[in-house]
Amino acid sequence: MTTEWPSWDELQAEAPPGSTWRIWSETGASGTANFLTPERVAAAASLVRTGRVIGLDYAINAFDPFPSGLRHAAQHHVFENNPYHRDDYLDSFYLQSTSQVDALRHIGDPRTGFYGGRSPEQNDADPEALGIQVWGSTGLAGRGVLVDAGRYFAAQGRPLDLELSTSITADDLDAILEWEGVRLRGGELLILRTGWAENYLAMTPEYRAEFNRRNASPGLAQREETLRWLWEHEIAMVAADNPGVEADPIVTTEFRDPDQPPPARGFDHNGMLHRPLISLMGMIVGEYWKLDELGADCAADGVYEFLLTCKPLNLRGGAGSPPNAMAIK
Figure (cartoon, helix red, strand yellow):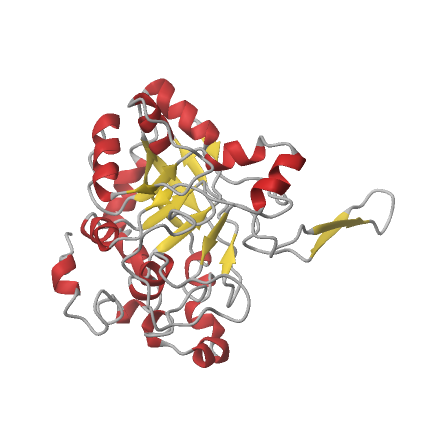
């Protein structure tokens, strides 16, 4: 069964423009998970050929100190009730401090609210409406596609500087997929490898501390064409090995509100791709994913598609979660 969704231009006639709130109102806050139809998930299972399983999560506390300085390492406690028993628990576990998936309640826009037009007060009063359990209760599965920007740009003789904010455009995405020999069919779980996390974790503690004061990373461009490209290809999830999927810090953007003051504390999300991507489109977004092994494997066999599973925590009202993701080739 083929489902027809509006084109990007047609989506601009929605209220607010670019939102999927009305289109997917019957599925609650599933967002772009609606692109993962049963037929597409079943077809993705046929991509398993060798049975090779590659984990896509970094260890808890891998990014310590965390680049922003706002999320601290979890404390792991192990206890016993008798000599032949062990149990454990975590203290101060920031669910977005390592490989993670954002819930739709994670980011809103002061002009339009959180996904579905919810106000901050509504988001707090009904935390489950947009919580991570929407995807965590069932999990996500589909055709994973690795977009290896790191290897592509290196092959073109212009490698990415992993300590600068470089925008990866829609045209770049098309060029990388053509170089890999991959054709999108809709419903993909798109995985963007820049090489940022590999570079960051290879730094000495001293260099990392210095880099954190000027943290930067290549990523998707803050342009409407990026949103159009993701929508018209019916991308169900976009995840990357960098801190925010998009280029950071913002160099140029089409989403900044000049009349919006910065927040009293925390990140200034004004101009970020996150706002329209999550609060309007309802996109599943993943960050800090572990893509070194997957990138090497795809480069070795030339196969950039695979069955991908992602199982966020079934945490009611969670704003994010480790992805517990696997690529199966």
